Amino acid sequence: MHLGFVVFNFADVYRIIRHEFSAKNHNHLIIRLMAFLRKEKKNSVTYLRIVQSYRDEDGKARHRTLYNLGKAEDYTPEALKKIGKALYELGGGTLEELESKMLHELGRFNYGFPLIVKQLMNVFALDRFLNGITRNKDLGFSMAQSIALLISERFNDPVSKLSNYKNQLDYIGIAEIELHQIYRTLDYLFDNQEKIKMLIYSKGRNLFNQKLDLVFYDVTTFYFESSKEDGFREKGFGKDGKIGNTIITFGMLIDKNKQPVGYEVYRGRQYEGHTFSEALARLKTKYQIDRVICVADTGMMNEDNVEEVKQADYEYIFGERLKNISRSKQNEIIDLKKYKVLGVIDQKTGLSIPIKYYTTEYNDKRLIATYSEKRARKDKAERDEKIAKAIAFINNPEPLNKKAKYHYLKKEGKDAYSLDTEKIKRSEMFDGFFCIATNNTDLSEEIILDAYKQLYKIEHTFRTFKSFLETRPMFHWTERRILGHLSLCYISFALLNHLQLKLQNAGTPQTEATIRENLVRMQLSLVTQNNHEYYLRSKTTPGGKEILKALSINTLPDLVPKQSITKYLPLIE
Figure 1 (spheres, rainbow, N blue to C red):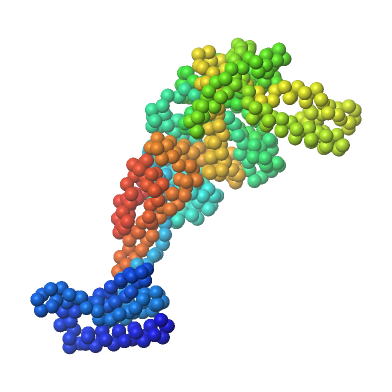
Figure 2 (figure 1 turned 90 degrees about the horizontal axis):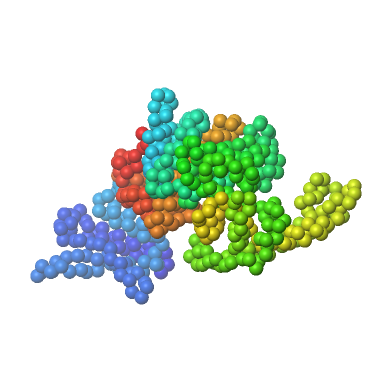
């Protein structure tokens, strides 16, 4: 059907209905003529008819067709709208009145991040704590509100504090914060960082009623988009591979559920092995924990740290550098005839994985060595790569300087090198072997190996800090603001990890990225109709419902009058 024919049909309909709806018959027709639009679908085609409802002489309800409009597909959307408007005018309405009855969107806001963050803050009693430490400070703003905004932004899309300030109007449920108040928030986080660590630790223990038996410790670095050193920010070996940037060193303790136990921050060139003593001091004096097993990688395995663990009356499970022990003990450990096979359950798959292991005593500690053919292939590949570099340096030794020992090279004279074949041969002997040292005497090899294997959790924790929460690169330049920023990220991690534990315990685990995606979709549209304003909720995703359920939060109604929204999204006091 051509557009001209459509217009002709519409004009015809208009004349017929207008004639029936003449002024002299208007009141009568209101009683007897009940016309409506009927859609009928036949063979995947939708037909439109204007149908009259009436009663016959016997009083029975009947329908009769006033006009056939034909196929709906033959009309353009504009033509259908024009028909609707004309019919509305025939009923005595005006287009202005019709327009006022339609919904109009005035704005769209995210409610998911503020709602979840404020609930998590309440779980940890952070809102009461923050209000308590600022009660007599005459701040002129709510610290809890400011923290809720900053954490919402870290969960959503971590950006600068200036962008946090600009983005706050994208949320609903958070009072407006000034930019200078955001920076003051970081200062107060710095002033109270030790209290915050203690609060998160104590609440974390109580929330899941868990006994702290294993703590994992590791160190990482955070870099700055700057090369200026100040005694705190220093150029050093950054674990992000940023050459020339200043860094700081960050040591952290977590438990077996990745719940944070505490952290310390050090200057950039701080040797990581020397940071362990403060971690022990925190456990022993600040948290007053009596019996615990410290788990750390080979970087922490030095005589000073081992001695401090003993003095604290703690136990340890450290990675041991096999190449640093005596030759006689090395030869004993690399003898595969001594090895037994142990079935260790893989936590991800639930399957039993056979592991070759050997246990021996050495210098008042128990050594548990393992062998893996997969690790042997990896060790060989890494060595082959270094040998290839060494051969290239023999032909061009100038870049070497003092690095020859790292490339299987030995010096033969000034700017002359050769392959250290003896060192290469010695290295080959250790392919596939790995060693763990412990002073524990009662735990089985399976438990100890599994405990050390769980060190990956702190690697995941650092990945969350660096990637998801984007703790670095940092753009703060004073030590006070830097430490305030790290305190904010620490709080954010604790809340996020708690949410993930709740979801996991509920049987509905979600990754960090999935949580972000579900919260992004929790939106409210501010709409107006008939001079009234409402908030219209978007459809909640299945994952969003799981998050709300895990935190015992009721789903918002589909439509909420604007003046009633604080009933469902109350502001933090």
